[in-house]
Image (cartoon, rainbow, N blue to C red; front, side):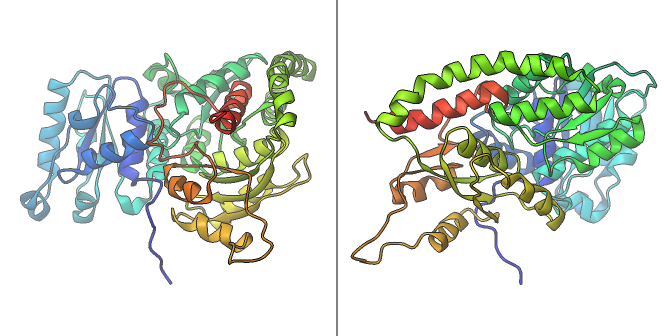
Length: 444
């Protein structure tokens, strides 16, 4: 039996491709779809990603064919060709990417043929109707096309150079700060990381990605097409690693990467040891008040497949909290569930959260009630407190109802402005701890 999705935490495939282009340097989207498709994405995506704006050519500046009845009846390929030529003439860019909406895909417009016929123009085409998937698939489809058609093929390999993907811009409001930290921690063990859309990176990072020694996909779920395309078109193997938050997860990440690249273990240990001294020196600051006013809490997490396992592990093994319940909010396959399930086991604390997979915004209330009975005028009742919810703005009303604080860490986030904040790596662990404890002492 089919079900409705109450307030989805993602957009369509076209929106995912637009989000990646928003993060890419001098890349101009050309939307072949009905009027409003691109702008509707911007309205939701901008606010939900911590107000990241339209960028170089986003928001109301996105070129679009705005197909109407005429094109739907007689075909819109001629209109698309006209739009491509006009866009290249009027908007200065280094790469132009045609992406398609549902209407033109249903009538059979061949956007790839039109793009290929633009002789001498840097134009690619990616089919991104909503029936191809959500924003996660849109990111993957565009990255796959870039891997097969844009990245230079070469037999040369740059030692200890890696490509990093699986952190989806917009879908992860903290993507830029996260990628900066991932690049930093990999450099600690002598690894040069190409994150494609990080600070200071340009389309050259895409063009030259074929010379990497290894691809690292920071997700158990995202970018399967892109990972396969890199391997098939460029011969670059890939490993999947959990998005790391905090000291222990980042140490494990570095050791796994070091092993994959045959980096001397002593070098990795030395780098980790130096970060350990810095990291736990900051944690010492909270030790006194943690014990004095009992800052331990129940933790509830409602987040995507990158953040849900990482945050649950972090609050258990680094904050010393009880990871009571986690809801993974991505639509995932049974195979993906099996991969994710193992991330919620074998915590150092010996604890494990109850894990659910549900895309509906209101589902957290149902699962928490099922696991912690509400007070029905019982003489003796243990409330679900003290607790903290890690989720999105969708959890705000429920957190207020329970009387517990909410930390927004997953899309959509409309109650925070995000610049270069990171929750990844060593520095991200400190930031998440600081934000978590800051909630608890805010009223003192």
